[in-house]
Length: 74
Image 1 (spheres, one colour):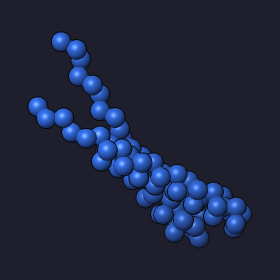
Image 2 (cartoon, one colour):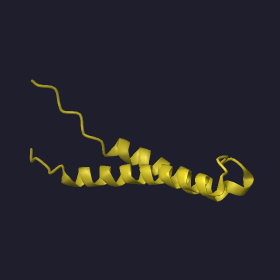
Image 3 (cartoon, helix red, strand yellow):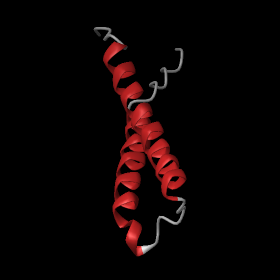
């Protein structure tokens, strides 16, 4: 069985981690600038959409590209 490089997996995991952090930072900066922390308000639907998509893809991507579980020793 050929060994594959872990580099592409680490790059993808780093990208999804960055996406998660950018989503949280986007919400924090937007809330600080407009002093409105309620993302469920009707006027904040766009912020909610961007926040949920960025954080959701970040979490799912991090789960999919996490370090694989090593096989048990035989």
